[in-house]
Length: 315
Figure 1 (cartoon, rainbow, N blue to C red):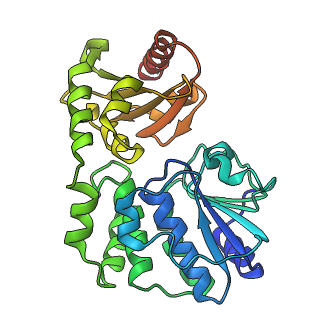
Figure 2 (figure 1 turned 90 degrees about the vertical axis):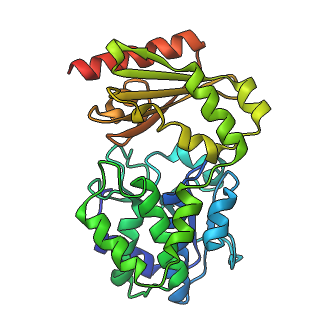
């Protein structure tokens, strides 16, 4: 059932022993939002902890100690943050047949929770958490503000993606006023790459194909190359945005092999609806950033992606 933010706050205030689930292969927004919500609830005297199926990338743990001060309890209320579909929570959600509350900003949210709050106009779930705090009667501190800044800045590409709004800037300005070490945080998030990431950048550039008259750039990253490079999921997240940076490219598609034989596609666009492209392939996401999975051959996955892209581009 869809609810408003005031009702979401009421539900959180009515419950204790709250488990917060982040989506697998976590990014800065799900982690920043989950950590901030945990801290806000703890400041109210509630027991709360945050869980994720996959390991948290070191750069995020360095920023706000995401798994510190975890409470031990049997969850009585389960909240999902920044996850449009229950399956994105992975094995972390398996012990809980019911997700009690979902707080999200994806317009493709599947309404899988008992209660769901979605604000598709928010550039990041962290923007929602910032607005939830006063409704809970909870104040921010430096660590919570830093976590929320991480969420807003990463989902807006350091405020350059087209989803960035004046609201994003206003919230970021308020968060910065808590004393965030902006230079160090932004360097860690946006100006630091591992050597394995550089190797994958080289592979991506060398494998890039230009299709549809140059409007589409397609990159394929074989599983063997990914495994030999030692690249992490966090490193790969940044590679997906490379094709979109090329002049004339409207749709960038990155397809990569996975250990189970499937393929994961990440679609990044400039003026084409990426969510529509991925929805035609069983996935979803945002208008400018979306994804989907294939349990087919490489050729079939590529053909399906290109067919969906052409259909959406032609309207």
